Structures are given as C-alpha cells and as structure tokens.
Length: 203
Image 1 (cartoon, one colour):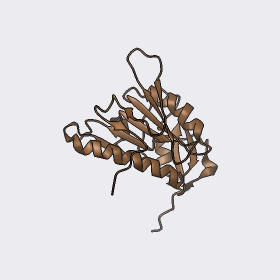
Image 2 (image 1 turned 120 degrees about the horizontal axis):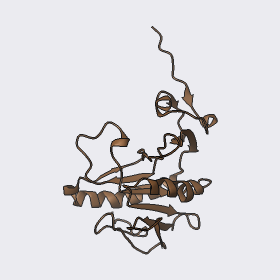
Image 3 (image 1 turned 60 degrees about the vertical axis):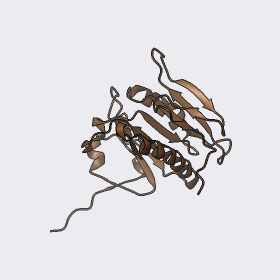
Image 4 (image 1 turned 90 degrees about the vertical axis):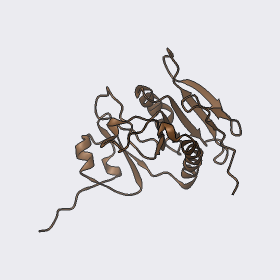
C-alpha cells in the first residue's frame, strides 16, 4: 500500500495559523527555522556560518561548566522549544542555545515538561527584532528563565557585544547589562560561570 507523502512546510506558510499537532504532522523544508508564536507559524532562514560560530563558542564554554558540575544535572540543548504560557495561541520560540538545571533522567516526553534557566540567541541579519524585542518579551514571560544572553555582532561580526538580561526580584522587567567584546560577564543563574567572548581555548 502506498503511503501518502506529508505536505512540506516552507516560507509560503509564514504566518499560517495552526496548532502544534498540525505543525508536527507536516514535513519541514530544509534551510529554515520553524516556530509557533501565538498560534501562527514563523518561518526564518537558517543561520549563516558566523552565527553558528558564536553559538558553538558559547556552547563550548557552557559545556566545560556543565562537565565540572555534574551534581546539578545541567543539560545544554540547541533548537529546543521554550513553552511560553498564557499566550493567545501555542507559543514555542526556539533559542539558539538553552541551559537546564536539574534535568530529569530519563528525559521528559515534551518540552512543556521542562524549562531552561538560561537562553542564548545570536542576532542574525534581518532578524534583530526577533531577538531584541519579540524574544525579550516572550522569555520574560517564561518565569523559569533567569538570564537571557544576546550575542550582537551587528557592529563587528568577529567581535560581538554581549547583551545580558537578568531577572531580579521585584524588577518589572529584565535588568540589562551591556558587555563589550573582551570584557567578562559573570552569571548569577550559573554560579561561578564567567563568559568572555574574546577568550578562545588553546589547542
């Protein structure tokens, strides 16, 4: 018996209203990132190599930290779903990188059952508002997230600025710290973790 091929999602579906179940039943055309925001599909071009360079840079720094703190069961994930509650429709932005603490083993069935404490986005050309405006608001609504790090390469792709947003008690919004390239950022969500985008591991 011939199996009917699933219809493929693509750029033409940007803005299409659909449920999570409908989205999961469809194939994704490669070369794009697909997110459900307020019950509508958001389709973005896949990141370019320099974008991935900084994602991997931060991931390597975090992985070193995770390895040194096995007792807290930290986990890193790329392209996971962050489930944002109390929205008009299903809302699941996908950060470039997320760090979880006390991650369960075995892992849960769905991303709605876990929440990161740190999310990381690297700004891509033509997508700045997604990371600096849309996601700033959405990640604030996901109360488990303690810090949101934005890597901004707009002034220099090889020497980006770090915009660190921290959740502080009784603050009505993120507390923002702009960290120039070459300066160190000290996290409070991850005790004793420091990030400096200029530092590279020696081979």
